[in-house]
Amino acid sequence: MAESNARPPATRTIIVVAATLIAAACLGIGLWLLLAGDDDDKPTAGEPIRTASDTPVTASVGTPVASPSAGSTETPVTPSATPPGTTSPGSRPPAKPTDGRLDTRTISFADARGLPKVFAIAESATQDADVLAGLFAGAPTKRPSEPVPATDFAHNVVISVTVEAGCLDPEGARLYANGSRLRLDVRFPDRNTPPECLAPYIRLARFEVPRASVPSRPVLDGRTPAIPSANARP
Image (cartoon, rainbow, N blue to C red; front, side, top):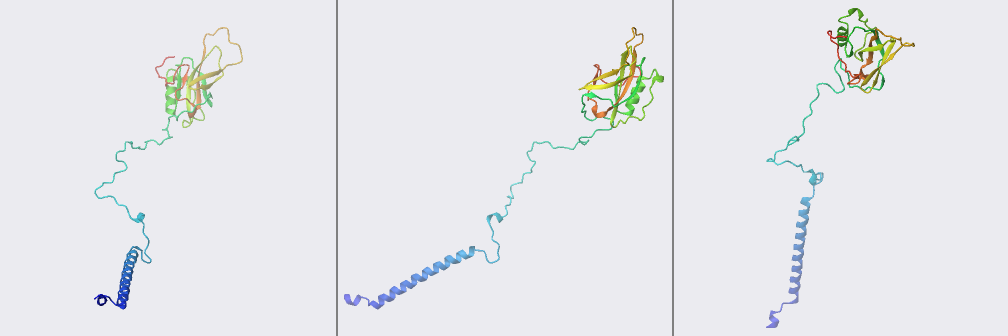
């Protein structure tokens, strides 16, 4: 009975070969499927290679985009009506005074006895006319002649000031500045003061001064500039 159930050697060889072929076929099919899957992920010839950065980023439809100014506490800057660095006609620009002599021309140096005392700064021809009108309202014949050439008020101002000279008739005066304080340097003749003085000399000095040289708040002998009134007394 043992001999009848045993398979001949040729049959066993055929089975082994068949099993080997089947295993090889299965392995080949598996490799083919694996390679086919990799080919699907590769770009085809001529197609550009895309990366993650090529994908556009879009905002969510339900998320509103905030305005740059939302929640800002800054105050918007509005343009000024007057451009910076400009001044209106007849007004002085920011003063840049330098210590030393201010006057560049003496317009007049005339007798002022009987006239109101004055320290005035005229920044326009109209203001200068008001100064003269207030000073010489009661003595029009003493009014000095107009300067030649006329003052260029675009670049200069006229400073009118009373000079109390005492018993010597002064020959002239100059105007100096030390910060905001102005002072007069009166020039006297080279002679001795007379022993008695019944009528002290008083002069009206009118100086032309560059507009930018005048301090913003000038003071002369404790006085600030003012336009004299026609009702002012000497």
